[in-house]
Length: 83
Image (cartoon, rainbow, N blue to C red; front, side, top):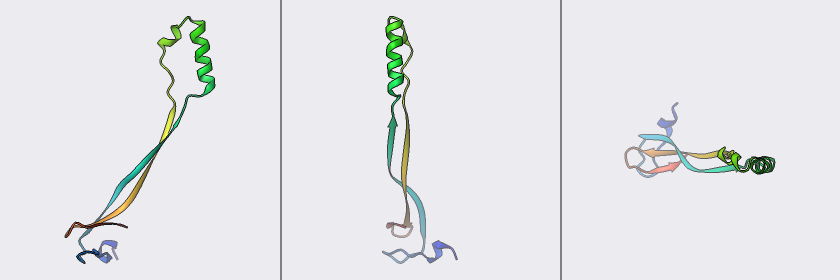
């Protein structure tokens, strides 16, 4: 038996329901380049009289976590609720 045929809208009692995944939020954790990289870069800048500054800085890496929620939406009345 299909899940959409069993579900009923709490507002109007209709069975014409669609399901969607909705993004509710996200977080990003950044990771810096590190102290050895910064120290080595500073030494190279001093030894080359600043020519090492032409080369761009190494950017740190980061990871992003996305949080999702499953929502049901009644196609008859427009009410939405968490599943």
